[in-house]
Image 1 (tube, helix red, strand yellow):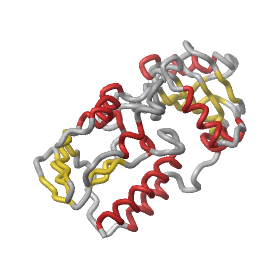
Image 2: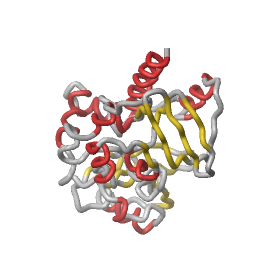
Image 3: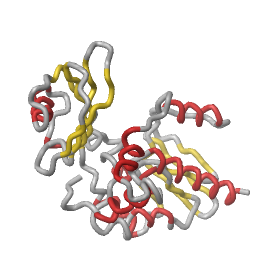
Image 4: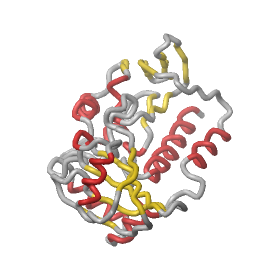
Length: 263
């Protein structure tokens, strides 16, 4: 998101989580990856479940109370549950009607959203190129780094920008302009990306918080006095809104909380 509206406290927290070492933070957030990708996590979760998994089933309403909750789907189906764990990010919560309505502090966060309007782009260039570049606003991409060296003698770069509206993720011309910030000698041959901010089911990029939201924002989602719970990296205590570490942390904690509540 815009560096002038983002919370400096979140950046300081990243430093604290990385033992004050910038290189370690780079390793945690960008370098190390799961051997079999994210599918190794969600397939593992799916294999552990005994209940039904419903894909492509949008939820439009959640009624929650002290003894359970009711979920209404877009197709009109009503599902009763002992508890509901909502993992939708803040950017997508305005697609769901909550009854009773969520607290005023939570509604304010949903209305304001996070400072998460950024873009992530994948760029393929000729040759095997190894570099890392940074650039300040108003450059379209703030960080660009080598990610994969391909067998066809090309390199896949990954880049992050502060505003998804500033760049066409599928435009080779835009991608070449980005690369030219650091290496005008490189030739872009392909580019792609997904506009997560425009995606109805996400409504944001990585969930970095606005000024003031570090102390008056994400933590309010822990204070819902019913069988409705929020889990996901947006609501984590550690790597909030950025790394899967935060989603695992919060998901594990909320799962334990729900199990204890239902016993």
